[in-house]
Amino acid sequence: MLNKVVFLGTGGTIAGTAQSDSDNVGYKAAQVGIDKLLESLPALQRALGAHLAETEQVMQVNSKDMVFAGWQLLLARVVHHLARPEVASVLITHGTDTLEETAYFLHRVVPAQLLSGKAVVITCAMRPASSAHADGPANLCDAATVAVSPLRSGVMAVCAGKVHAGVYIQKVHPYRLDPFDSGDGGPLGFVEEGEFRRVAALPEDLKGAAQAGIERLVTANCPRVEVVVSHSGSDGAIIRALQNDPINMTEPLRGIVVSGTGNGAIHEGMEVALGQARQAGILVWRTTRCAYGEVVLGSGAGTGELPAANTSAVKARIDMILALMQ
Ligand code: ASP
Image 1 (tube, rainbow, N blue to C red):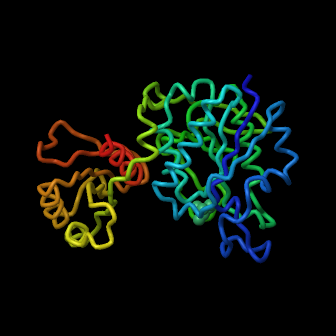
Image 2: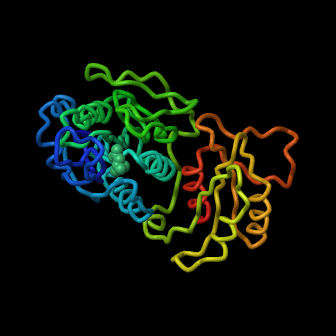
Image 3: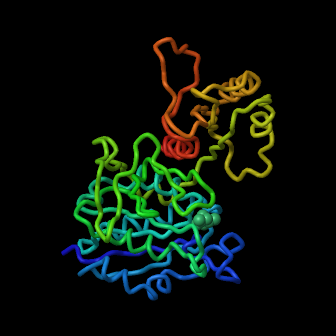
């Protein structure tokens, strides 16, 4: 019954083109349609085996420009296709810049029952399709291998032979072909010679969302949540500016996630301004700007301390948006 893989194109470098095949940075992302990406790839059919490919261009964007409405559109299509009995997996092509945010968002909201025996697999590229060293084709084939593997589960991302959990993946390098890391969680596995070798399972509570109300989620307005970084010299001016200058804000400011130093610490100047923001009803969370680990709460944590999120700031922003939408 599960004989289809639906490829959803969203853009990114994997669909990018440059003037010359040696240009790997001066290209334009999101130029080539998903049909075309699959067309010139006979190895993909081998990876898919008996499965049929179906394609849909959901959007065509450079993922640095992703917006919440884009996630809503994508979520609606993912949910639609996963609910089809013949669909084994949904495979999304995406830019690398915000891949971790899209993966985390989908991980948080795609209902677990739709993922039973199925997966959402996201892939990408660091070199444009026009490059003499394009990595998109191999990544697409690896992602297809994972999409049809009996070991697939949940929201996963495939790049440079590694399979990352959607909840853990983060971009850690701006140029190399293997730009992602899964932090302390490590990768879920590897694709080697057309085989998915899975080395890790996800903890039970991370296997999929029990999120109800998808209909509302795909149409609701996104509450405005901003991310700020605490650094030397953070005197709180940015917080006051956010609160006092709603001119360009279509949605009023509802929350702030602070990417704090070390164990989620915040500069004293910024802390004062955040206290005032909280008094004005703005939700404030803190997290760490460190690449690894999460804020560790000791028993001595004062009651006045800000709530700490256990993800990166951009992922905590997604959690806060979802919390504010409840
Ligand atoms: N700016 C590109 C994007 O995220 C980068 C990439 O795909 O590698 O769409």
